Amino acid sequence: MKAPRVTLEQWRVLQAVIDKGGFAQAAEALHKSQSSISYTVAKLQEQLGYPLLTIDGRKAKLTERGEVLLRRSRHLLREALDLEELAHTLGQGWEPEIELVVDEAFPTPALLRALKAFEPQSQGTLVQLREEVLSGTVEVLSEGSPDLVLSGIVPKGYLADPIVDVEMIAVASTDHPLCLEPGLISNERLKQELQVVIRDSGSENARDEGWLGADRRWTVSSVQSALEVVASGIGFAWLPKADLQSFINNGQLQRLELESGGERNFHMYAIFGKGERTGPATRLFVELLQQSCAQCSAHK
Image (tube, rainbow, N blue to C red; front, side):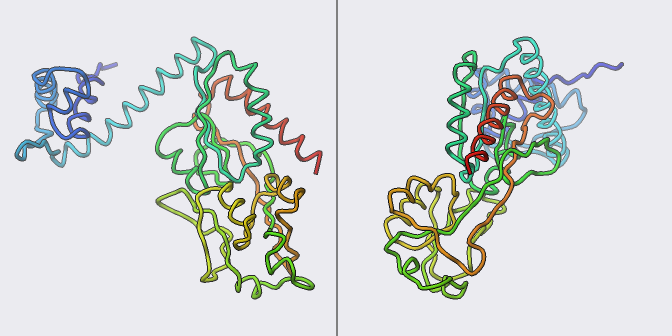
């Protein structure tokens, strides 16, 4: 097998020059001298036989060939880092850290029970928890490789297990006009009131999930914010049933009796961001999460 003439380090240096905006900035970011950076790029171009960069003022810009190769080199470096991470996982047998991304609609009680059960068995594994809404979970997968994503959206190419059914119900404050309505509430009547909607945290393909289309809409960034706004008497919303119980029990919120659509159900999945490279700590956490979600279902 023919050995490559260009090293991964050379591609890393080229990426740094472009990403950081120049040779001096790349040198600072990589903790190298500027002369070392310049030599590495010059040697790379010499080995390939054509220029990858042009200098415009003080800024280095890619040639057309350079743009093509830089894109491919990014993939190559990611693969190399993934390979090293896999080797580390196999060698250590346990992840030092789990990056967990959770859709805010995921039942909070089930998540907290699983985290509590995981901690004494974690062998020191750190948990980095990040909350997103709707397509925000998918964008996190496209930006990197979180260990586990809990979402209702499974993008192509990822392994996923069904984990829980989420039930969203329409609620308002007990003193809201909708709660004083006689009989069932129609869709047209709902549109006359202000609806509180949780903002999709994705930036590329944001979705208006659950919005009725009425002009009177307030948008908040989290389930907790929506709960507090609605409980204060402002508007109505569809919110996760699992997070509502204490508000309903203490009389702050009331379920709305609608002609149709009072409940909205969807599946939530455990998506393995690293696929077959998923480590034992992540798999243990998923098992505990499944047990916790089963416990939720048993008490419905």
